[in-house]
Image 1: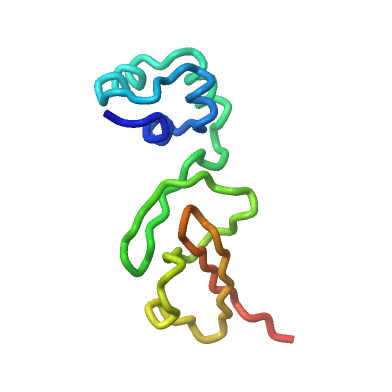
Image 2: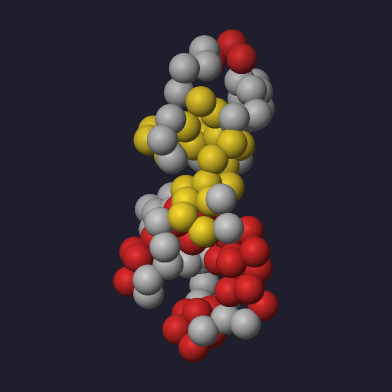
Amino acid sequence: MMNRRDAAIALDIPLEMAKRHGLPARMSEAELAALQADPPAWLIQSRANREGRRPVWVHLTCTVCGFSEAARPKKWWPEFDFVHCAHHPAADLPPVAQGRVRCEYEQIGTRLVGVVDEVVQAG
């Protein structure tokens, strides 16, 4: 059995949409497979409306320990070079390449930090 959030991730729809359209709090793998095999009109429309846009869910994996979670991407998120758990010390992270500066974005997912190593602009 999976919970509604896991079903929403598998269907690539927001959790709010899953609730609104009556997905049960718990559903079996067979129920999910049936929903994917014969999607209702609202699910077909949702997928059609999203063509070419950002995904509803992204899977984030810590570069250091491999912890992984699904999260809803935010509009302000840049393209991360990597993510890591907030508790890892800087010594555990990949080194910053010469000519770059590290920018960190906290609170990505439940406990992750997003990292972008930007090119230093001369001037």
